[in-house]
Length: 182
Image (tube, rainbow, N blue to C red; front, side):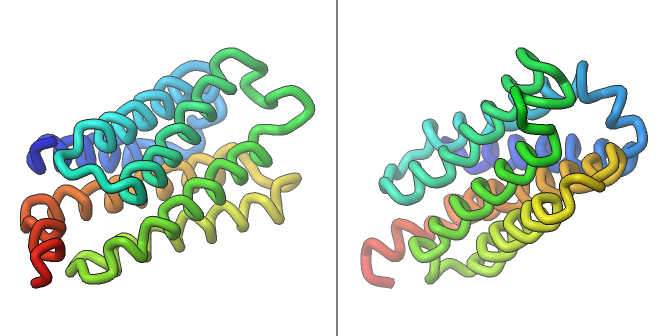
């Protein structure tokens, strides 16, 4: 995929994240309506970014694709189930699992981009996702809807940074240079 299109996708994710961060109190009302669609959209953007990449290395496709699958799963769970719970599992607990899983997937893709000048962006995005997931997971019973909104906004911004780093990596042809030994 063209690096400019990837950058636009990252910008859309960042805009969604900023909107959610600046409106965290309204998240309770949006959970049943908009948030599932935003998660589905973010997941689809992530998956399109993975599928439409020019160079296809398994590690740089499968693991970021897993993040997209987690986002789609979260969106479908909220849309098709009770907006406050998926079966016996509450929204904060499910959201924490999605964050931790997505963060781990990001961190597992970091060794493949170790030589990249954007390495710290990849690493930081994964660490932020895991930390936020653990924060929600260990305090999930007391998590408010506004706090979930802030966390979701930060996660989408971390995802945008991750996708943007891949776009700039493609723009700079870093993967090609690494394959040539440079």
